[in-house]
Amino acid sequence: MSFKIGVLTGGGDCAGLNSAVKWVTKTATDQLLANHRGEALEVIGIREGWKGLVSVDPGDPESVARWIMPLDELVVRTWDRQGGTILGSSRTNPFNPKNDQSRECLDHIAGLGLEALVAIGGEDTLSVAYKLHNLGVKVVGIPKTIDRDLNATDYTLGYDSALNVIIEEVDRLRTTAGSHSRLFVVEVMGRHAGWLALEGGEAAGAHVILIPEYAFEVARVAALLEHRRLAGVRYDIVVVSEGAKVAGQGEVYLSDKEDGFGHKVLGGIGEYLAKQLESTTGYETRHVVLSHIQRGGQPSARDRLMGRYFGIAAVDLILEEDFGRMVSFRNGQITSVSLKQAIEKLYVVDVDTLYDPLRYNGRRSSMLPWSPKSE
Ligand code: F6P
Image (cartoon, rainbow, N blue to C red; front, side, top):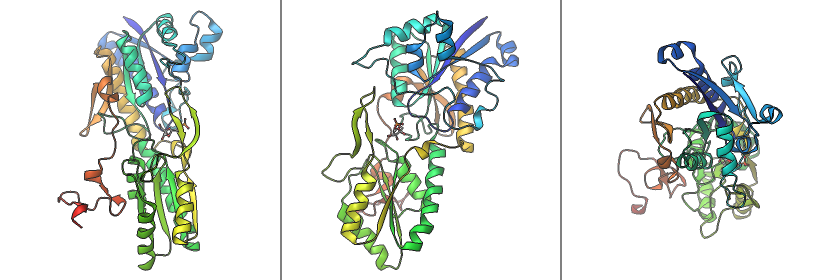
């Protein structure tokens, strides 16, 4: 028996995607495994996520050449060391209420002869996968997002590489901040979840970390910084998540334009905060927006490995005919969860156990109970 599977990457790109595609392909097309299981799988890559699936005309060879990339072991051989997504990505939503293309999606899956589909993405991409599953498509998901805000998995592709970018950039900023006795506000990604700011800030040793889960007060940030200067420290690093909010105010957006999933482009909190802090404290202040740099570059060892393990597990699910599921990393093991569970809520920082609202930083107690209210 032989059947065809498709693989696509959707939403914001990140490091580790190519490794996942490589290992879906290698596992599916492996000859030894095929002999053992008596099934050979053919793999095609769909370019630019859901956009490729709604755009391709399976009956037109030119269109197929534009949107479909046949994958085999030789094609994907070097992919795992490369950043971004070689298949390309988009934020196209086939179920966009303003432009519903779900019919095209279903027709093209059938027209391409796809028996199963691997969707690699975050909450948006996997919510489309879930809807398709409910319409009868045999789909499995692989979690990716540098924000690490997907539910029911302890790891999402891209997160570790992004964290490494944050610490590298903050390390660089430290020398110049020190030379000029300046305050640097570093804005990192994280639309709804502060994981990158919190763990990136902790790993980089930031003095103040601001996350979307806890609205902050500028006066308190200023007081924390002043306290440091009085103690003799000559410069400071503040790490702020792009989705962080000043108490009583909303998020700061770069533009009001919405994508197919209804998201506006976040950004600007770093600049806003830098201005506010400079006028409040009088310290010379600069801001740096790390933005898409966090999604770029070569994948870390962890992202290459997790791409590999997730890719292999996705093919296992297909062979087990266990559809409508997302591969997941939980409690140190590769497992799977339902797509429904993966998208039913976002995984955000638990302020009560991980964040210190007095210090605006990570907690300094992990096993002992401590309530900031008691101080
Ligand atoms: O969802 C991942 C993410 O990197 C967010 O942190 C960020 O807000 C968003 O994507 C940026 O998306 P775009 O690439 O469309 O600018």
